[in-house]
Image (cartoon, rainbow, N blue to C red; front, side, top):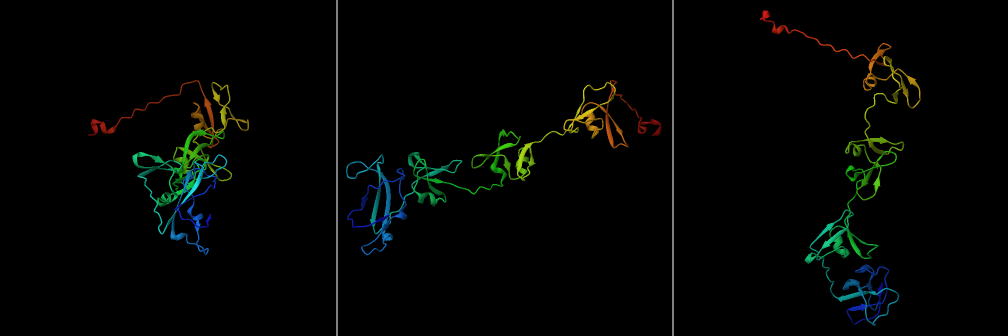
Length: 280
């Protein structure tokens, strides 16, 4: 915006309408003051702007807009900006709310006051005025930024809330799973998912074929290949199902054996020679 002409007042009001009619001020860098020779003399003046509501018949506005740009030009001095808040709070999305005297609060603040705190001023697209946002660099490899929300995907993967919002099923490392007593499942594309740790099954895909003989070897069937077998991977497969086991093939293979008879119990009594009075 370039201001041309001559004025004897300290205030100029125009009827220029703005898309963001709720703005509390405009960008001062867009305002330039030149002298009669066209020389930029903006730095010699103090500038302050406000978006104001207009009433009366001194200006004519069209449409539903009832605001206009007010530009204050102060010769010879630059008016200081007062950041008169007494404190501020931040929400989980980084939006800063300022606290003023009498405990009044607002999220609308001059950009200079926001930048003075090291935060980022921005135009809120819904409210159409400047707000201030605190932003931290998010480390996507930090497991603290991933929290399981208690839901599980159709594939059985745990769903995590990400710190900036939204949900994910992939985590940056297996540690993110271990933190919540889960285990990792590495996909073909090397992404890591978290699943529940399944209990150890010593029989693998093998299940007992019913009916089981009262006395004799127990037959199992492989649920994947549908092949029946009596040869088992480990003695634990027998004992976990309540059967005895027999080592065959030089002890390299196992068969389960079922019997109605009770398992024998053995009691050994060994005299302790240290207690023999004749040996003292």
